[in-house]
Amino acid sequence: MPKVVLTHPTGGTAEIYLNGGHVTSWIPAGGADVLFMGKTAAFAPGDPIRGGIPVVFPQFANTGPLPQHGFARKTEWKVAEDDEANDQMKVKLFLQDDHKTRELWDHHFRTELTVSVGEKSLEVKLDVKNIGDDHFAFTAALHTYLAVKDIRETAIRGLTGKWYVDKTQGGIEVKDEAKKLVVSDEIDRVYLGAPKKIEVEDRGNSRRIEVRAAGFKDAVIWNPWAEKVTGFIGLDNDDYAKMICIESAQLGSSVKLKPDASWSGSQTLTVT
Picture (cartoon, rainbow, N blue to C red):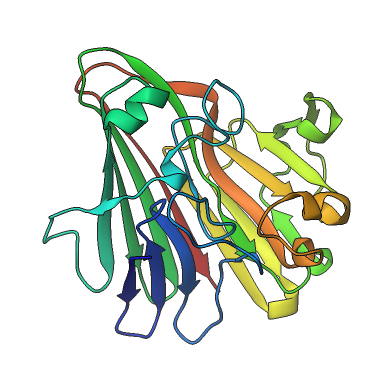
């Protein structure tokens, strides 16, 4: 399938498939891939890709009538004709409504995804504009799969004192009192009003991954763990031990756009 490869002069690279506007690889200069890909991930037109950074739009999960996580991650995006936004280090893709999207979601929109690679950073920016005559509302996320050496040797910092919805316990609200989050079982948490910066200590790979969000109000932390991992297409039995999803998201409250209005959310990954 068609893809775009970005290269920074220092050697950092990123790979983006037009199917889903999907970032599947980001290798910082002198390092290893920061994004996790499922061993058996499918690469076929119209199929979601397991791993990397799926674009969730216009519906998160199954919170509405649309297919799981909406249609953007399964639709072919196009490269925007924007000389200032398209070079070896940056590309802008767009997805605009057509008869197929309107059969699922009857609204006129233009969504742009701008991916920028630096020496030790990757920025993914999502812009949504209402180009129709009616109001619409949506939820969205950048469903980022981060690669770690061993999830049991990984700690997540920055969430202390924040409240989250625990989907593994029927959606109860819990305050995170831990100084650091160490995942040792299935986790599916929605942090409402999440911090702008979350840090992952990937001790097995001797690196720290910083996830910094702007525009997105919430964050999701997810790992299916050993019992459920086989239920997900594209994941092998042991894949759960090599990944953690930290998703910059807008889902506690939907974004409401009037005609000609726009919204923007971004996520920047850096490695030290």
